[in-house]
Image (cartoon, rainbow over all chains, first blue to last red; front, side):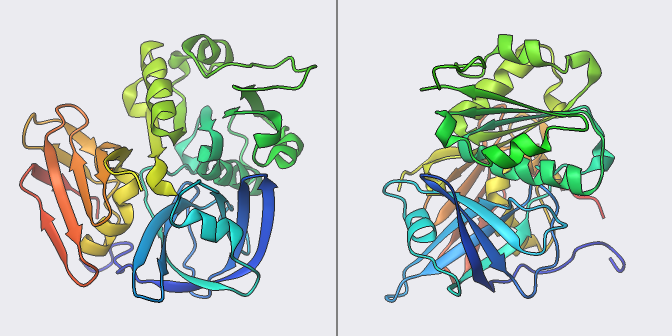
Length: 248
Length: 87
């Protein structure tokens, strides 16, 4: 097996919080210094482990939001009511605090420019996080793969990375929002859940053989994946990542 | 916390890499029940506090069970006929 890639045991390492950046009312980005970080690919995640004073441990997975080119490792975390881990990560952590993480892990839900396109990214709420790492990497790497990000949020103030996404809309990247619960009075965009008609309108068509990445809560992912297959997209071209309340 | 939420193989990437010492979500797994072949990242995963169950996305047969108590990991692979990894 000599010479084969990444044969390394996963070990827990200590991350230090460099900064905590609010994204929306319930979502924060943790900028982390991880001294032994080995680099990552867009779409990968980390496991976080918190240990209580009595020894009780809770583990959760969080997607990496930052591009591989970023100096700090960034995780964007949504506060989940009644969650075990996210209330601590979003409410208690301050600059200089430390916790354990291991990673990066995963390889299936990863996009690199060499995988080509066109690229269709479909995000539900904080499911945008691993897709944002792909978008950021696309920009940092100077890739020009035609890319559509279809992003479903509850309302305009719930749109994570809203300002940054507006600034990135050049060079073949199109960002389309749909707001499912409330929208500004002058909203002219989509205001319903992602459905087959929306996906057909936006494209790319199945004939273009797009690389598709879908991330969000389990019901969102299943509905979008089914709609894409019904439209004629090859299941093998659709990569999905689900998260549930256990993400809390 | 809610038990038995359906996730996918990505959610098991950490524990699987801990066991196999390689990235496993890109590996192809063959279901012993129906013979379907899928990347591990695409199978269904049901995660509980201490245990993780991987199921075939086609026939729902159990492919793999992983239970950990923090000091040991117990792995049941009987539903997985084959696992093919790139080297």
